[in-house]
Image 1 (cartoon, rainbow, N blue to C red):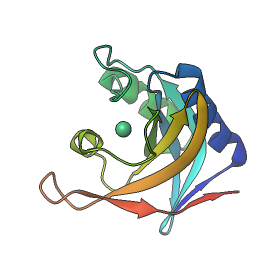
Image 2 (image 1 turned 90 degrees about the horizontal axis):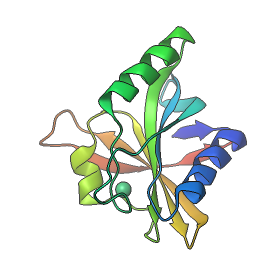
Image 3 (image 1 turned 135 degrees about the vertical axis):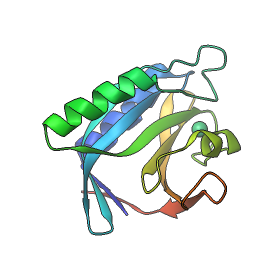
Length: 143
Ligand SMILES: [Zn+2]
């Protein structure tokens, strides 16, 4: 289960509307509380994919290291990632699974239809290595 405040939830959905018709991407920072991932802040990242930014995304590894370091200084860990699917459902793609490497993190996808954010779904990357990894549907609590 992913727990996120209405402010952060709106922020990631708005980000997808702003970058439409391209994908947005960013990081979810927070902490684990038992089985619940609690988001305490979100960080926008630049989408480094310029060849096909409407259906794939990539966060610059250097940017990710910086986000992780700044988060730790505030006592926050990376608990997930988010991106948008312009004019596509809020369902993960094979490409999303191939590019997901953070086990036990949430991957949040927002569909943006004609510039307006619609569904937002979360998937937890489960498994233990690249061969058995899977996305599992994860409930999102906005509160
Ligand atoms: Zn995707």
